[in-house]
Structures are given as C-alpha cells and as structure tokens.
Amino acid sequence: KYRNIVAISDEIYEHINFTGKHHSLAQFPGVKEQVVTVNGVSKAFAMTGWRLGYMGAPQWIADACTKMQGQFTSGACSITQRAVITALEADPAVTHDMRQQFLIRRDLVLSRLNAIEGVKTNIPPGAFYVFPDISSYFGKASSGKEIKNASDLSMYLLEEANVAVVTGAAFGDPNCIRISYATSEEVLDEAMNRIEKALNQLV
Image (tube, rainbow, N blue to C red; front, top):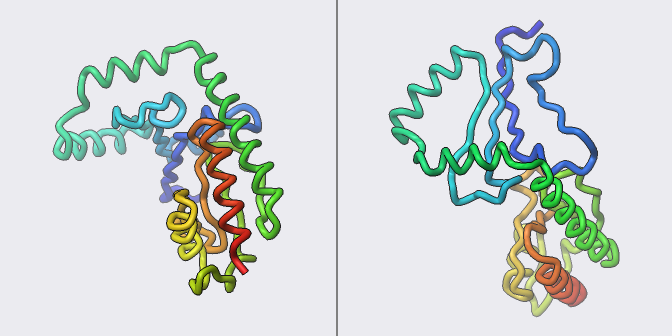
C-alpha cells in the first residue's frame, strides 16, 4: 500500500533480548524491498571500539550507500573485518552467556529502584538500560538547588553522587532518566547505593 516508504530497522540489540526470539522487520512478507536493516557488533559482542557496522538492503539502496561510504571512509580496516567475521560465526553460547549476565544486572537495578519511594519503573524487554520515571522529584531541592526536570536530576546525581545518568528527554520522555547496567554487579550495587542516598536527600 505504501510503496514509497522505506523503513530503517536498527537491530543492534537483537542478541540482548529477554523476551524470546528476535524478529527482524525484513523477514515479514511483502516488506523486504522496503526495509533497510542496520546492525553491528558493538553491543552483543562488546566490540564498541572496532567501529564497524553492516546493513542489509535492496540492491539499489546498497549500491548508493556503497558510493557514499567509499567517499567518506574509503573502507573498513581489514583486521576489523576479520574480527567481526569471527564474532558473527562464533558459538551462540557467547551471546547467550552475555545476555544472561545482562539479565542478572537488569534485575539487580530494577529491584533497587523499586525499593526507592517515588521512582516508577517498567521492565525493559532488552538492551542494557533502565528508564525510570523520576518526575516525583521535580520541585524538590537539596542545599538550595531545586530539581525542575530530568536534566537537573541527572546533574544533581553526577555532582552529589558521582553517578552518571542521562536525561530521558533525549529518548522521548522528559520525565525519565536512562541508567546503563553495562558494568559489573559490584559497580551497579554501589551506584544504586549512591543514587538512593542522593534521592533521599531531596525534600
């Protein structure tokens, strides 16, 4: 029906999925020629520094992207290409084990957030972030500094607790902050101790 629309499907988190099998948009009947699938190894294989992604697309789009990419970066490092091939051909147990570790960390952070009065959370179905609603703290203050929005709260946590979070305004909800759990359980536990203490100081 909408033949002039092309969808770009970012599937970088396909292996960090806690709800079951990943479904790619391009796999569904009748839409393959209208979907550009982009992916990479930075998330599931923890290869952020290798800076290599890939895409699947109709030939005419792939050809156009090849021309552009050739002018901007000339080409990907051959060593990086070999490393990515090795990652993609690796035993699926590698990503399974990583996913299980992320699940443990997610549940740790969720349990700590749910114990803090005024914080509302949803259960993330994938990736390695939680996105709690912290709007109940808007209008509160500590040491004369009022928290007016998520940006203020993010800065407050950085200055007061030495914990870095990101305002949800950048991700579609200004009432939330984004917390990454892509680190060890020990670090996460300490971070949550600090966040809880800092939030409890707001009145």
